[in-house]
Amino acid sequence: MKYEIPAEAEERLPAPDTRSGLLSRWFLQRFPVWRTYEHLEGKVVPKHRHSVWYNMGGLALFFFIVQVITGVLLMVYYRPAEPWMSVQRIVMEVPFGAVIRSIHHWSANLMTLALFIHLFSTFFMKAYREPREFTWLSGALLFAVTLVFGFSGYLLPWDDLAFFATRVGIAEVEKAPLLGMWLADLARGGPEVTVDTIGRFYTLHVMVLPVTILTIIGLHLFFIQVQGVSEPDFFAALPPEQKKYEKFFSEFMFGEIPIWLCMGALLVAISAVWPRGLSPEADPFGSAPAGIKPEWYFLSQFQLLKLFPGKIEAVGMFLWTMIPIGILTVPFLDRSIPADDRGRLVTKIGIVALLGLLLFTVWGGLS
Amino acid sequence: MKEAEGTERSRRGFLGFLGAVGLGWLAAAIYPVFRYLSPQAPPDPFGEDGRALVEKITSAEVSQPGMGGNGKYGNRGLLIFRNQSGTLKAFDSKCTHAGCNVAFEGERIYCHCHGGTYDLEGRNIAGPPPRPLTELGVVEEDGLLHVYRLTGGGESEAGS
Image (cartoon, rainbow over all chains, first blue to last red; front, top):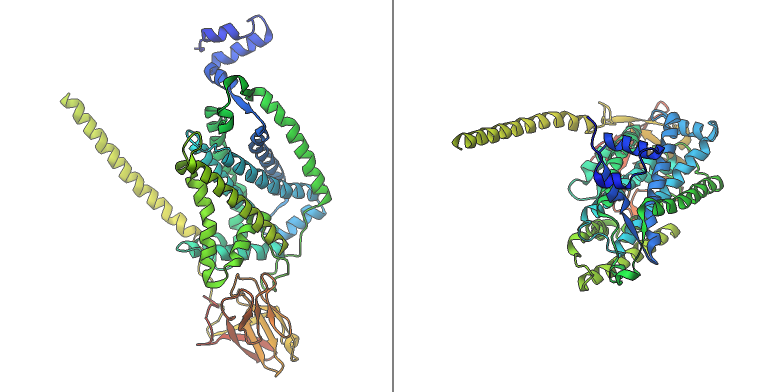
């Protein structure tokens, strides 16, 4: 039993005696998706002076795809039972191993950076407002998963920088109230970072997190396809004849291709110029080397906590926790379209948060 | 009509029953997984005689005043050195701030992660550490070093 082709499709499909006409009919008789096709065909992206930010999500997706490919390749030689030796082999012996590992490293950093920009640009364009609350929340979740990806992947080479950075990072988790100690022990597989921790982080990094992130990416993209791209207030206020749009399929998508190609080239270039190093194998009993620092995306938190040493560390933690809480609640606090006084206040808070984040990151990097 | 209500009620009853069984089933499945993932308590580094053998550093490496370095006891890091008056001193090497291993630097004990500084008695004198290091007792026997837990002295974090 084939499906019937709707009349409005018949009107628009190529003539049935052409090859494309035959093929499209053959497909529609098996998958009755004409209405979905029409919906996607009508999808547009607003065109204005801030349109460049619409490419950031796609860019993060590009870096994610690079992560999947290079990650699968690294898994071929990486062995959690002899982590450092196997990474050293990838770097020293396997043809192109050093490049693939460096690309994985740089692409992870650029993916996080693209997500930072994506998060802040959608924030300032107030795309989180009704009806897109869940697109925003799923995006926040994607960002959190990406940070866990970064943290878990950082330990896997098992060199001394990674080892002590992880030890310090988890020691921070320990200090969180209530569940902190339990979570830290669960992450480490005991009171110390050992090879047991590698087993846990490896499983997270190559299995649990990828399945999780793919699911949420699917949802996030599905929401965007259904709801379309949000229009920022200044664009929505324009008279209709001044609003310009670009079709998502395929003008916008084709527009992304040159960006992706350039970024791919950039990745290879920076990986060649600044290959990811491997410091000596971790010695869990030796003294910590100088220069232990978290990755840049944890630096702001690291620096903030440094300002509140000892007993008042909880104050610093509380301050930092305000950021995720703010991200999770903002769609429900700031709802007015166009923005009212509260909306403008939220924007100002966002600017302060962004400047604070930048300041603390640079400060943490320099000190 | 009555019959339909009765069917509806028994359908709800069945769904409730199914829900309860499902929850029980889930709990029965989650508990073993939870236990499986929960870390086992590490073995006490101090043996039956209350002592732990020092490894990765030998007594020859701490034979003279001013000599010292990092080693291990059980599964933990150790800092051991001989002070200027010739006494062997040993500390659990875990910095009380963020858990890096401290280093012996002759005049002081220093942590490279965040600049935590202790004096040679293990007292935190500069930088972020909130507490002194955990001191351990040392005995030298047949050229082998052993450490033991000091009762009452400092916080007994070692072996916890």
